[in-house]
Image (cartoon, rainbow, N blue to C red):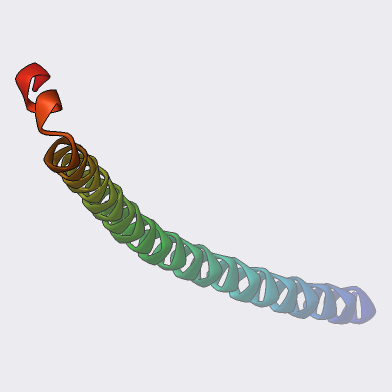
Length: 87
């Protein structure tokens, strides 16, 4: 009986240690998930800002293309006054 109780006590200690280690692993995983979620949120914010900046650059380039086209049309018509009839 005494040896059975001692074995049972050892088994309970081991089970307790295993449960403590499992909980530590679980907490570590939860923390890693939170950190990953935070990083993904930051990346998403950066991507949104980058996308917005790209759109702004595209609009500026489009505006410059239109201005450039207008400049070319004006310079062409100023070299040939007869073309102004068609504009």
